[in-house]
Amino acid sequence: MSRRSAGSLRRRLMVRLALMLSLLLVLAAISAYWNAREAADTAYDRSLLSSARSIAERLFDAEGRLSVEVPYIALDNFAYDITGRLYYQVLDRQGVSVSGYEDLPAPPQGVPMTRDYPALARFYDGRYRDTEVRVVSLLQPVSVGDEHGMAEIRVAETLNAREGMARHLLQRSLINLSVLSISALLLVWLTVNAALGPLRRVKEEVARRRSDDLSPISTEGLQREISPLVDAINHFTSQLKENFERQRDFIAEASHELRTPLSALKARIEFGLRSTRPEQWRQALQDAELSADRTIALANRLLSMARIERGARAVADGSAERIAMQPLVQEVAMAMVPLAYGRGVELALDVSQPFTVWGEPTLLQELLGNLIDNALAHTPAGGQIVLRLTSPARLEVEDTGPGIPETERARVFERFYRQGGEGSGLGLSIVGEICRAHRAEISLEQGELGGLLVSVRFPEGEPAT
Image (cartoon, rainbow, N blue to C red; front, side, top):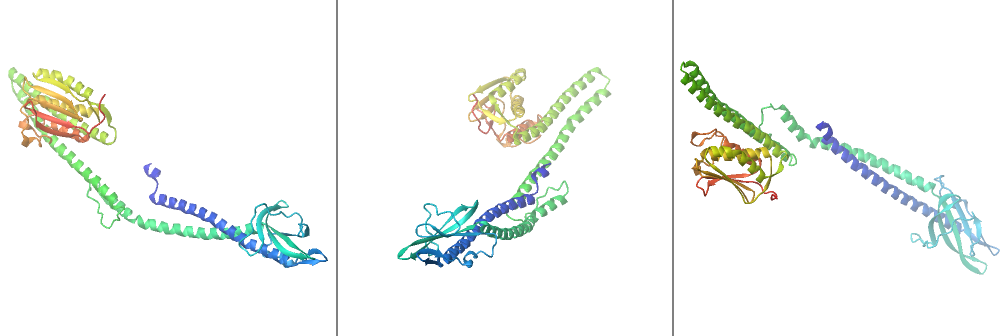
């Protein structure tokens, strides 16, 4: 479905280029039409003026009246295009029609004399016999008897010939532009195929690989535009390989850690079964119960690690939510109070600056629960554990236990590392994973109470209200 919706890169390039060329073709066609129409108007206007001049040359004085002998050639200048039709009219000095068609449209007010030709002529558009026409009005000096003045010769032409010529020129232009566009698309197709060659090579190289081959793809010979994509794929496969290795190591370590308590549990049960004395049965059952509790606690820790990985992916995928830390810390602290009371440890909460974070609430509860559980494990009876929310966006857990030597602080976040050989070795490792998922910084220091101070600083969010 994703391939169908995304479409082919080659097809997208060709479609977009075709649309751009089509747009350019339309613009070029419009420009070609107006250029052709302008060329046709220029040519036909010149012929109109030539016809008017031919008529003006045949004006003469016939016994005190202006007369004209219109030569046939004057009305045949457009013989090469029979689609057009000419009309003419000659008016004397008083504006009285002497010869030709009546009622040819007069020049509108404000039409200037042309500057393109050395003549007293005006060109304008009009309508004659329900047909659009192009008209030239030429003023010609005449002498009739002893009087002098200006005669006017009007020659009108229908627009059929002009439009036919413009269409002909447009068709020629469109044919040339279409051939050019098709040739350009063909060249672009060949160029795109050649440009996508390196991508095909990368695809074929990845397709030939085994499912367990996560080695980097070679970038030798790749273009600058493709190298970043391959580098990103290599970076992703490198992270994927690292995750697989971590999972493999975790499974191996977890199997080893579970094997020991399960073997001890089996040995205690076997010992009890071999014994015939009730007090030994009871002792064997008590030892088995203690070993089972430790095994269950270890299994829960392992399940927590798997749950953390799922939660970390949810945070990375944008499923995080805005969480007020004060209610969350209060809830976890209240749940841990009975355990702390049973061990004779005081659990206190100090909120000097409430804040909110972006995160996954279950993971944050797991983080705080592990920090309190770790502090309870190392705080003697009569001691104290203090939870603090301070600015900027900092969570602190401080106890009055023996603390952790500075040389061991970096190792306590490793899986199955036990300080003094006690515990599952997963508590602070889980804390470190949750901090990484939330982009939080965690540090271990010597606290003012004499024990360990664990400080978790989250990326700053909006202050809680």
